[in-house]
Image (cartoon, rainbow, N blue to C red; front, top):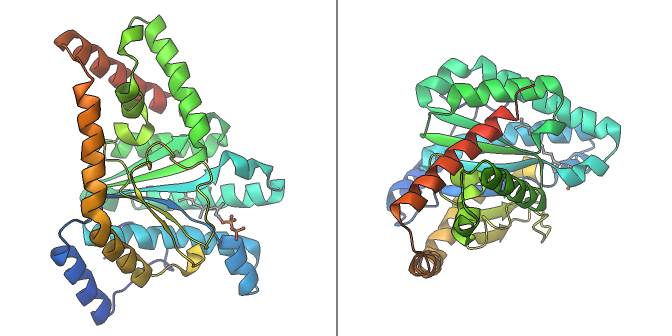
Length: 306
Ligand code: FPP
């Protein structure tokens, strides 16, 4: 049974060997990643290579995302953040932007149709980014899905639309100013830690930053995706176009993480300790920060309202 049955083409079935390898990884790895951030790159090149229409490349890419959600869920990885549409993608032709939005519209409506199953499996869907730019109907269904699923923690899917890290940081600064003007926080409350806590993935139920940053298609670029969130992640650049990404690629990535995780986790902990040492938290400040972060999360969902 698949996690989100969004269409017939993404109903993935494991072979015996894939299931065996998956169980070995799930129960044998000492440290599994909890959160993976993905730049799903290479849809158009995949289409060109196979003489498909460009739109078919994007559709196959969207289907692949739901397979990958299933594989991650089965492996015990419970959060994925994906770059569905960057602010830079606005430079593409109107025709291509319309195609991408139609695919997004279709996928969101398919997710809505499988809502019963999503409730059953307790999956949280979060739409992230400069959401004012989304077409009204996509904004409306994003708002609906986020509201319906925001209490769940079993698996979290963060889909980034009209997103760049630069833009996220700009919005965090604007929100801090608003928070100060509303007397929610003091200027002295603004520090590295508050900026990190204000990042959109930090306000998810897990608050766990990505352990792995993955980009497909062989390009060695970060493309302004979750730069602060991924500063201690393991960066993996897979030489495969996104629609051709398969379960063996994912298994291989997790094994690579297993080999390097001790060093990565040590570095992350050292950084946490440095921050803690520099922090003088009193109860009042802790309460202010909590109130501010609750307000921030509410603001972000409200922005999806038309
Ligand atoms: C990168 O390939 C892919 C994109 C710009 C779009 C990805 C978006 C989706 C798959 C839609 C997902 C929607 C939902 C609601 C989950 P590219 O076009 O840059 O290909 P290229 O690198 O070969 O040029």
